[in-house]
Length: 95
Image 1: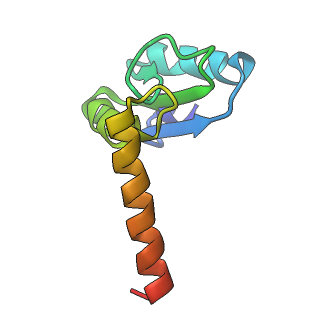
Image 2: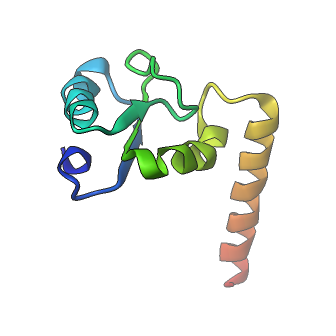
């Protein structure tokens, strides 16, 4: 509802059920926003991941979140795994 009202530019979450997303998705789309999964596909209700955002940043969020989608390809998943490793090493070294 915050995205639909313009209080937030975007929202994403995983592990959701269709009933968790349906009403909010309707609010966002009726307000002119976009809703889909992390790869930008509109068929998200059964996929347990949701991205909702205003149209100005939706594409940018898809680009950022796509590697973390359970529907991403092997190359995207490898890139995400490397990024997570790099951040973990930075945290361990105190950077």
